[in-house]
Each structure stands twice: as structure tokens, then as C-alpha cells.
Length: 266
Image (cartoon, rainbow, N blue to C red; front, side, top):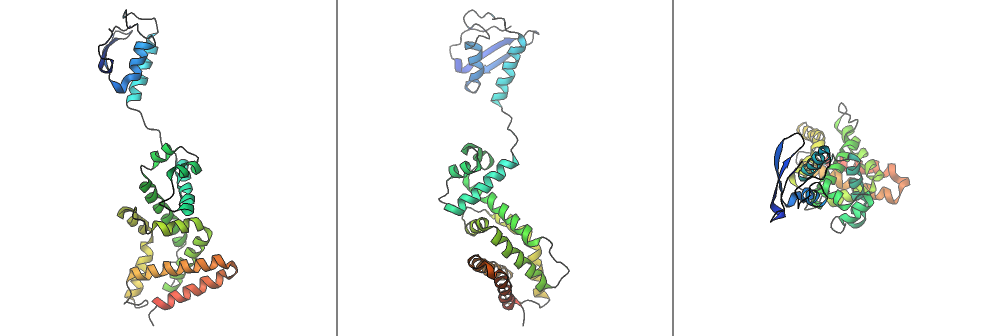
């Protein structure tokens, strides 16, 4: 059962309810609860003129109240890892084709097979998407470079392992490599993302630092320069391999020889 009168202001309606079990309650039908107000006043749960019940079982009325309260404070659906990955994959393709600035989120959503609103459910802004993609690709690179890292081998062998794995990854993933070149110089990247992107490579940095202390590598070269030089020479090597795949082994090995000659102590 429920009893109510026609309100002067339906946007601020206070509905006194008495359910079949005798429990009374007041429901504030403010603008955010207009679905409930509409159901009560217009769909016949109660007759707003006579205030008489129309005979619906109390279980239906209780269900309407519960659904309306749920609407007011909706429980977020769990996010899908598959959708998130689809958005990141699509972003990689679109950013590689159009660049970070020109790439529209509408096209990323389309290629991911989701609505644009869904994209912003997973990434609040385009900058958030850019930062997430940077961290994702960095993890992929780290996994390729540091997998099976020969910790017990000499410094040269360890660095050549990292070099070879990096070059091979770049050749196998041309779109990710192209996008990463843009991401690394993007002003959208946060310090947190840069720190997170560098974290998986700490072991390599420690290897270089230790080699400098042991007088294996040149002490006059800053560690960041040694790392940056590797990345730059590796990129040049990849470009050559793309042009002449038959020379891949020659270019990869020769590139490392040039790198090692530049950083090793004579």
C-alpha cells in the first residue's frame, strides 16, 4: 500500500510509503530520482489523484524502489582486460599512422570495436591513454630485452644480449617502435610514467655502473649517455635492417661492435 498527494513541486517530492508488511518510509524524489517519481505518478503504482492503490503486489513496488535506489548510486561494472588491451592495440595502430597529436580518440574507439564513451571509461583522458600505452610498451621492451638475462656472464656478453634482444624486438614490432619514438618525447608523459618505464631496466643500469667501477667501461662517460647511445645506435641499426633484411645479422653484430668500441675502456 502507498498513500500520497499531488505535489506542488514534483522535483522535490517527499513520498510517504507504507509497504504491505506495515513498514513506513519517506522517499525524496529529487531530480536524480525522477525515474521513481515517474513510475509512481505516471505508471500506476499509485493513483496520484485519489491516492488509492491500484492493486500491484507489494513485491513489485519494493522492486521498483530497489531499482531506483540502485540507479541513484549505480555499481560500476568490472572493467574488461580484453577491452583495455583492444583499446591499447588500436591506439598503437592509430598513433603510428597519424601521430599522437592528430590521432582522434573516435578512430581509436572505432578500431578497438568499442564506443568512444567506453574508451573514456578505461582512460579518463587522451593523455591518460598515452601514459598507459607508454608504460605498456616499455614493459614489452623490458620483457624482450631482460628475458634470460645472462647474469653470470661477462659485461660484454650481457650488454650484447640486451642489444640483440632490443634490435630483434624493434624489427618484429615496427608500429610499437614508431609509437615509442613519439611517446618518449611527448609532453603528455608524467614523471610517474617515466619512472615506471625505467624501473624494469634497473638491472641493466646496475650492470653498467658496476662495470665502470671495475674499470671495464669508461669512467668519463655518464651512465645516461651510455644508455642513450645504445638506444640511438640500435634504432639506426633497425632502420638499416628494415631496408636490407638480408643484412640483418651483419648490421646487428657490427652495430654492437661500434657501440662496445665507444664505451669500453682501452
